[in-house]
Image (cartoon, rainbow, N blue to C red; front, side, top):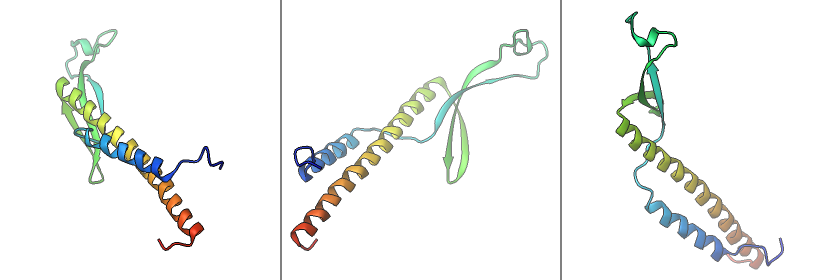
Length: 122
């Protein structure tokens, strides 16, 4: 790679620090998803059995894997808003960690490459 286009270790360290600072402001995280659900009741004269059917809802449901098992929780509309925010934070966190790993891989490759080139002990 030409020297002019190649990033330096300082560039990687700077980006790594920026990511670490951004991580501090992420807020609460929660994995999973929130989905609206609609239900049909057992009353034959109810609107949910009409033509066209008008099911009951929406009821909001959070779903996630907890200790290897799928967990569902019914949420109020306000709770659904909060969970959506926390889930978005979780996705941002995961993306930042992926980028941290990529930046660290590039930086550590540079460190090893420089040590081999100069014959220095790492």
